[in-house]
Length: 336
Image: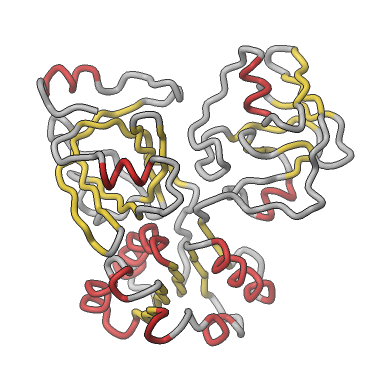
């Protein structure tokens, strides 16, 4: 972390490959704004003033902070590539990332970013229902912009603890009027999911982002909807039930010809790294998709928040930072 002592020199260094193996880009923190209680928006620009690469709704970037790498959804206007914006909630159980953004970061600092990448792609449809809980509004903002630009029919149901905690709520209402349904819990209670999701709607896709309990209820309601209608993005990987596998297993690596034993207290990623095998990774929590690895054979117990249910059933890839061999599967063969 540094302020800008020599823009030209830093620009020359930008584009170096970092410890995650991706092209890292140094950017300037141009502006920091409090956009709601506990929510800070970061506006980033390139060192030389050039435009950022084109990105699509649902994309996120990695912020490479001191001792932390965190993923945050882009919430900039799609047409303005001169800046990137992310908004960060200061979580009470912060592991350091959001605390640093709120307490350690300053305007003028230079940080490194990685991406954008997109694990929450926006699929074309005639109608959309967007559902956001709290800071889950951030990936939804560019989707609303895209749906509006395409002339699609859409509505947003947006819930939060209170109106003051709901970032961008007022400007959404001002811009889009009654297509924005606000549910500040201290005024009107939680989002009316029964009213929104009890009956499937033809030609409508549902995009939802928010806390895990909200997404689980949405998934329950959407079980009666056609397959592929619901698209979700999680803050954390899904928790496991008591039947989750905790047995040791072997991983055969086809590229190196070695076989590694994964103990109950290890992840696949940790086990292969201990043998000197380098795997691209970032969040190590099953939410960014960086470590996705092709599965040659074996049955996987998926623990990530990236793959869809269809992709998990197909079983040809896994996130090695969290997923393991399924119970009764003694060996996975991976393209590593």
